Image (cartoon, rainbow, N blue to C red):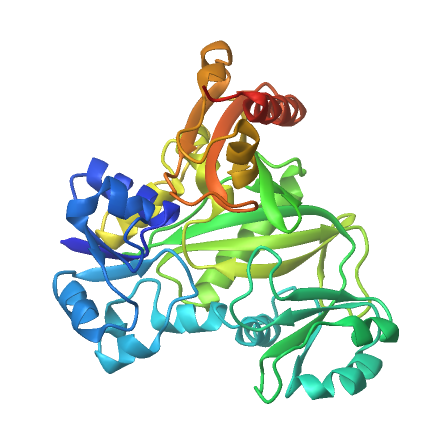
Length: 396
């Protein structure tokens, strides 16, 4: 069996590495000639535009099943080529999660806990809908937004006057969402196979900085009844969406139930599903060292028809993943190889993964590291100290 991967960034590359370790055949497709996979696995990578149908057709013809590393891929070519039925997770899942209005409507119709929302027919309707919905709220683009892009917090009517120019005339392009008083953010990765296997990974506790994932700790610092409830809801969502593959479910946890009563409660906590990712997720990088098999291994097993056993933590230690953005490279004064000599004196770091991206930019995800500690607080403290020390390393 040959597996196709649409996207040769870090997620596609790490999935390919799992397939390679299992001895499975795979191909990658990415328009970027210097994408991480194109550099490290050039013999397995096709470089062509997303809308080049001849190249896509040849790619799909070589693959038995195809997955994707990002939900922001064009779906029209799949229908034009009549290959949409070869995608896992399915085209239905992909089209649901790549549009926030479809995603939130799915949550509402399926009775899953969520932050209340209102879709806009046109951005010109914003003032009237805002008045009816009530302040404050978050204005979000329905498509294409990630890492905080296309999101604006609106506290008062006056804030509407200071928004940048927004696209008009595109029905369903914008959605407003109630502001949740977030106390904790966690994610749960579900894997489901065609043979009926269903598993969930241990919960991940996530910290964001400027809307970008900064640190992930597992196991998350939540009590067992709440953790079990969140895993149950994540699995329920994956079942209702009929996801075959992996589905990352992001949750907001709050001490307040919100204004509109669409969140769920467990003990003293209220929670809402924030969004889905039908693919490996940055928070799941920590599974490469914390669990007996990783999120990438799970997807590789599903794609190649292998069985799924429940993933387990490999030891009682806690693990923390720290994101490495372009700022670390820029602080070191390099746009090439990172100076990692500090690893020689930091045995608690069990992985440092450089994605190999050629262009260094602030806020760009360039790599990650994983560190272990006796408890979540110690792991987080060590992770912060390590990244600070790494940033202070100089090249040359």
